[in-house]
Length: 501
Ligand code: NAD
Image (cartoon, rainbow, N blue to C red; front, side, top):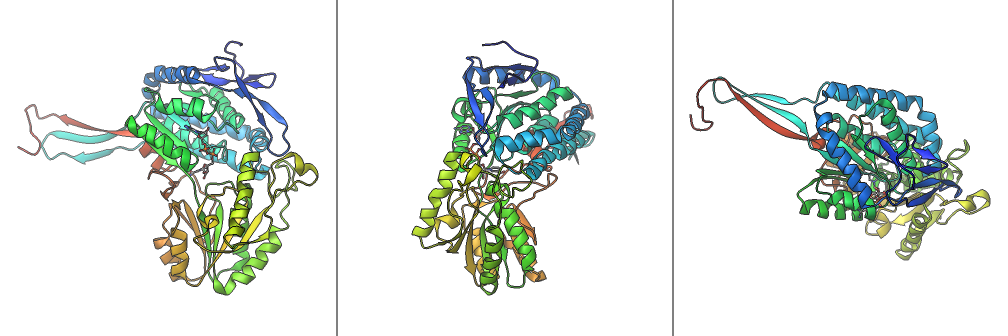
């Protein structure tokens, strides 16, 4: 086992970042990471354990006072540098991200761009972090509320936005004055490591941001349970989110959960169908359907169902699968073999319940595709709202088409799942737009656009089973990463009693 190094890797072996040093897992264990498009080895990453978590949390704890007492505008200056460095390295990091996660390069650039946007946005918050000043009910007394950091925060992230989601979490946490331990998904440690490299180059003080790679059981849960971790920001699946929530609740820790989705696009008879087709294809098959906001249900009004289905079939069957770095590729691989199997298992579920596979419905294995985890973009017709494919998150390139008669029925079908992340409607009817804005019960609503494409200055998150009511991004993120402190300054020189005098 080598000791701490000043570089993030040597000979294809990558390190954790703890207390400002790049360091292997304490017991030297590693795990391999592979390109999902062709199986090539990307590198060896630390398979960390409790002892590494303990070290990272201890480093973050030691760094907390220095960081919280650093003026927020100065913290912001570091984030401005992070934004500039990310922009400089955007292409290199995007290419790494595509190799590691599979999404096509143009989308990988967008993933890194979200990190850049968030860096600048949160850097600006360093000069705001507004509190509130209110009048006191007593004379010669000041009353105001200020936002304070919470302490050491654990950020646990999924693989589908390997730079954007770690950026959303860490940047909001850091500008507020918290110190952070980041645990990236096991399938995408390198993208997170690149982000942390940028922070290190931008001058983040030692211990303020730490990276610990490894599994959910060996790193994630020990972080959640660590007595010195004050808050957990988690994005991932509902099953794991529930576990995290239960563990955190028993220790009275605050936790934010950003979980799954079963997002729908509604297309009304009066919609611009060309526009709708573009929005549907982008939302359902972009990122190979592996966005939490991906459209997995098309709710279409009866009058245009057949026409829309035909247009979609023509478009979807022409989508080209391949490596995300190839310019000709429209749709990359899915993240790993077990996820591909899971997606495929839904085909029997769908047909067993009476749905029809209109196209796709099988792994793609011809030629070079055979080396990767490719699945054909799939349209399922004749789906009804009760079917499992209409209710469960599949997280792959599969779109279920559900026919409805009216706007009210469309909205009811949209709202009738356990998730509530994103929804959209294509219509030219101004009244329908207003009703949809009011009644679509999701955290994000799009009008005449697909279900994906959130911007970082607005709150992001969902209703019902998509989370626990918190929001990421926008100013909502600061609500989670700060605690309010109410301060009373009595300058009357005598005892004044609130509610009594
Ligand atoms: P996942 O739940 O398997 O893993 C998420 C993270 O949790 C990973 O870092 C994983 O290692 C860790 N983890 C696993 N078990 C753990 C445990 N017992 N304790 C603590 N941590 C543990 O999810 P995934 O497969 O990486 O991501 C896909 C899911 O994420 C989908 O359901 C998707 O909808 C969701 N997602 C939601 C949002 C959102 O903002 N709502 C955004 C992106 C992805």
